[in-house]
Amino acid sequence: MNRESPINLLSNCTSGGCGAKTGPGELADLLAALEVKQDPALLVGFGSRDDAAIYRLDGERALVSTVDFFSPMVDDPCLFGKIAAANALSDVYAMGGKPLFALNLICFPERLDRSILKDILAGGAAKALEADTVIAGGHSIFDHEPKYGLAVTGLIDPRYILRNDTGKPGDALILTKPLGTGLVMAALRGGEADSAVVKAATDSMERLNRWAAEKVSAFVSGGYIHACTDVTGFGMAVHASEMAGKAYTLVIDGASLPLLPGALGFAENFYATAAAQRNRNYMEGKADVSALSPALQEIVFDPQTSGGLLIAAAPEAARELCDAIGRDDTAAAIIGEVIEREEAAVLIV
Image 1 (spheres, rainbow, N blue to C red):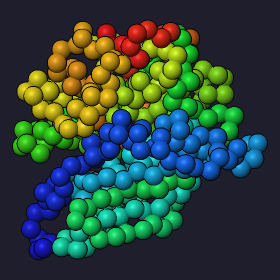
Image 2: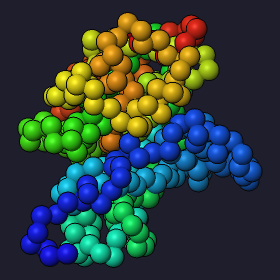
Image 3: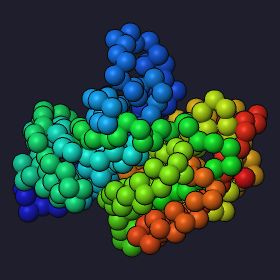
Image 4: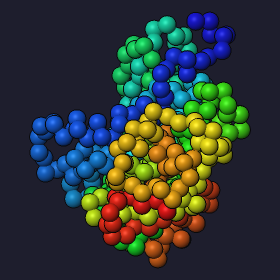
């Protein structure tokens, strides 16, 4: 490949971003069949479908460990590296931890110019630096499609772990980033998304959840934050159902959902993704979205890449927290509440 010719990472990939994730139903079936060692020091494992593993070191320290990588959703290799790194770091923030170091994960086609890989790694390194996180090494292989991400290790006080399914009735739900990245990226591939719309989406995707998480941490010790997760490839609906757990229903006001510019219009013009359909299939019988327009339904199931935090906060603290987050993450909004279980796991109003 001539380095002076336009870089087109998207043409080398069949899918990109968190939309490439294995479907939630299929993944649950695969994990259920595993036989694993039981260890009392493992405070959070994959059995709870939480965002990261947590392993106790002692009474005041535990390790947070996560891994995430995917194929490109943009052509700019440096921007791709930034988005992939921000996405991988997000799981540590969602658990209430602080990233310490990360390892690069690289799959790269032999046919592509190595300078492209250099730019991907530079983007990841820049985002890790912004997160005050050390890139400590990694692993690379040749593959037919480029892929990049990080394995991240962080530290957390085991007394203040944020789980994804421990909300309480009456909690207000806060979402810190707008929805619609899957739809915007699908429109980009279809040549229908203009540069301003794409930039709004990529700015959101490359933004660290660190800044929202730091606002959240000020409320954790007071017992005001009951649950947290990040909204990624399983879409708003599936991640909300995980937060609902076995006992509660999440009531979400569709009119309050923050949306990326252009996302609803693309849904109205019948843009969709295979991952959104997998998410919809998984939620059949678990979510009532009948009050929403078909386009807004598509938004709710749309896979998000490096999406925002979904936080269940005590109602007396929710507005103050949302306002604090919103000073930097301006799309942050209170979108609903946690109630006792009704017929559906998630109720979208």
